[in-house]
Length: 96
Image 1 (cartoon, rainbow, N blue to C red):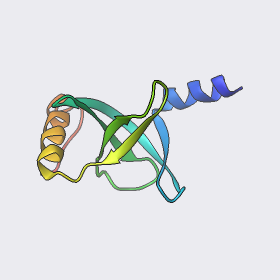
Image 2: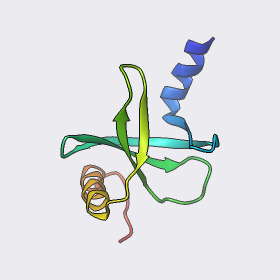
Image 3: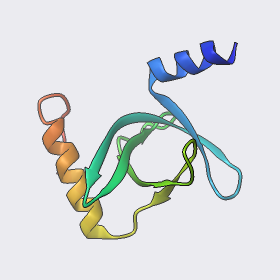
């Protein structure tokens, strides 16, 4: 039954992340972007009206697990968001 649930989750592109306080939040997966040798997830909150993109750095823990770290560097955020906007310019409308 877990495989079926996992398959449904992948099809809907919804992932659940747990923060350091143990609070679960659902996000819609948009893209994974490689920048300067690191990978960054581009997500949007699944349960909010907000269209704000969330960018998290992927930090591998082991072969099966990884952590997602908030990006504090404004230059990295701008660069990754720029790549994202370029990839989706024909699909999404962006407000500047």
